[in-house]
Length: 273
Image (cartoon, rainbow, N blue to C red; front, side, top):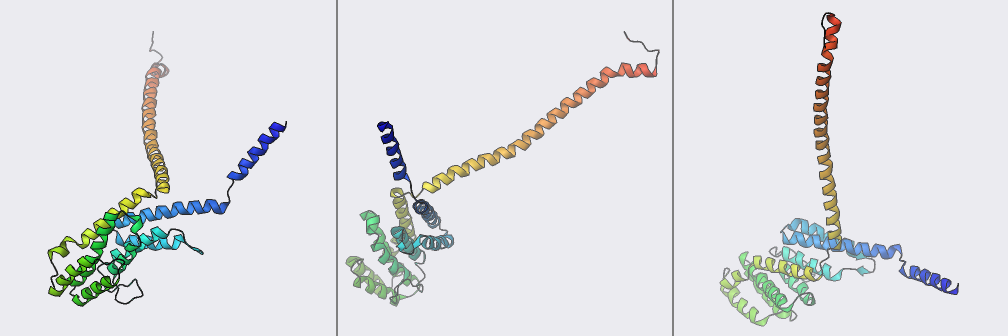
């Protein structure tokens, strides 16, 4: 008896330990939703759907915000970086309180805080592209003074300054060589492609795809059910046609069998063996 009571108490304790509040369940569900939203905005960026990307970034930022802070700091930082890259060639867009900081300069600042989220070689490669393109977009738009200001800004920010690269770019800016081979080799398109590679690498480590996979299974099930529903009326129609054919055949057979009796009624002289 004591043994049974102990087992019952142990079971009750186990049930109590496993119980969770609705708030705890809600937090898990919210994280799944945020992962799905992040995966979606990354997909929009990689497919160059930048208008939808901006909308989804705003939704992600609003959803991840809580009274005590943000629950997806690193992913939100990535969103901030991507947003600045998207606006890279729009020199009048400002993300910083500091005057004269153009989008790609601000992107370089954000990128420096993501060093732990990416392997070293990729981090250095994108950092170089941000510096070069910060200057190149100015030259392409005929803004040599802005290009010089960008170089000066990078030189004064040691966290993401690259002295050797700054010197090389200074020479290019001084000569006004807008389409210098060095600038074209570190093109804006290459920056976009490298950023997409970063997203692929990040999502490989943190797939954010639990809700995506479950939703995919459900979508596939619903699709199969819809196809089944479409096929059933076709089969029913075919069955009806088949039944009608059988019915016609039966009527014809009945008419043939009934003919002698009908003739007998109209002409009593007819005889049948």
